[in-house]
Image (cartoon, rainbow, N blue to C red):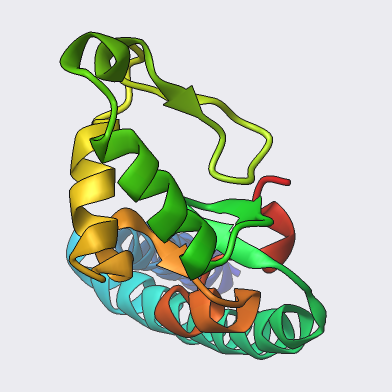
Length: 165
């Protein structure tokens, strides 16, 4: 009977020891998984998947924008829909250049858009520079495009619906 009790005691101690070792091993394994080095691979694969998804979404948007731009009418000036043609810009530039210096400072125009452009505003480009570029036939510098489709070719990531009317 004594031997059985001693064996039960040893079996109990060994059983508890094994259970404690298993618990400690699981804790250690969890700590290793929580280290930044082990998360780096998971993070990188997540970033790659996200990047790939964003790229696919961008490509889909560009196709959609191209179709929308092909349907839209009008010209584009400085991200505004404009009713002016290149000839209208040339006439304006000639008229602007014929103004006196005093009148040039007061000059303002809308370029066929819903917004006024003037020399005294906070615009980065003055009307004089715009007139000079128009007369030099450099319409890209002023941001003029004959069609929304042409604008979309230069700026495929911009939704044509976002062009100010």
